[in-house]
Length: 460
Length: 104
Image (cartoon, rainbow over all chains, first blue to last red; front, side, top):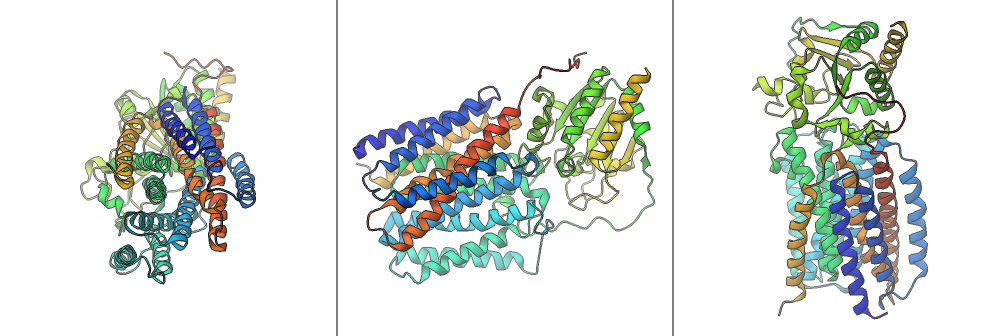
């Protein structure tokens, strides 16, 4: 086939990618969107294989086979609670591919000018996103400590490392023939990716994942410039802008500036919670007492958080939802944008448990309803419900938009212990008179609640 | 006449704005599947990887790097599309079964 025809295939493929993302605007058309994306990708691959430059198919077929063999189980065996890790891992793979192609291109033809600029971008972003995403994946999988790891002069060291990498990149652009620089440049980019993610804590992961998504897209777009391939530029730009939007949304939801996140949340050393142990009392309740209150309620808003994912409690929550709706209680779910470890994490878990998505509400849509709610049931969420964000200017999360659970008539919090949340910030919500602490594992406690409610139903 | 770089920059600029407009309309409900879908789409890096791996007279280095790149991006696109679909299949409004009488 002529290379001209391949260009038309690429145009079709690019159009399908755009449609694919457009169809993601509603759950009804979203699966069609995935299908469009698949066809677009298939066309891109077939079109590329037909190009006259591609003459050797043996290695390609082996790699396509190997990749598919790894990809299928990765998609089907992955539990939904592990989706953030999987996403981080695939950012790493995507970025690695871009970086390796850039490296191979460099050694193949030692390009000059604009192509070399694109190549430097591609490899810099690719390598740093590769190791950065691996670190994020490790933190999410908890094989690496999820607490921020900080050391003295972290900002200075990181920034100077990045500065040296960029300087070497510029040197390569000016003198592409200095091939001894390339490995050092690549090594620094790899190292910088690690250092970038080390100081970032688990609670900031939604922003970081979105940002790495953007970087991976941008490195693919840079590859498009290096190879003069517009399909790559379009797909990479779409991916880059998607990651950008998501990270802006995450930033706003945490009241952090965008520059703060662009630099990977450098030095986000949060203040230790005031060690002054005031004698404040909390009221706790048993499953039996909590069930009685829930049973008497007319409306309940459930607020899920990362703790729900950790405890794999989504199916039990579904049972709780069922038993309550059967008793005539109106149950809604309030989802904070940064609840969980990636954008939309909670929605996927609740959808997995087959909770109808029209019962899931975004923060702005539900906040006005808390004052009318009889019970706000918080499950494994902490900072996103902390009223100090509204009232206490000295709080590290002051100004962050939160779910107004404290306005509900009764607040129940399922929590393992009184340990402050990940960010180490105390939550005044727990000491309010109307708050009942339900101590225990989210899944175990929900199981008990369901049992008590079922018995109450039988007795009635 | 525009050279390759200038055309590329135009394409990049327009695609970025298009992306911003399209993605802005995606409901937060679907942000996780959206991210895994864009992830699969960014596996378009496979195109570059195929060109490197399959080129005539490619050096051993090119072949090795290309082979890893094709494997990595194929893994990405296969798992990305499949898991996105798997997630989206789970999003339902009201399932048949227990009559959920939530309306009041």
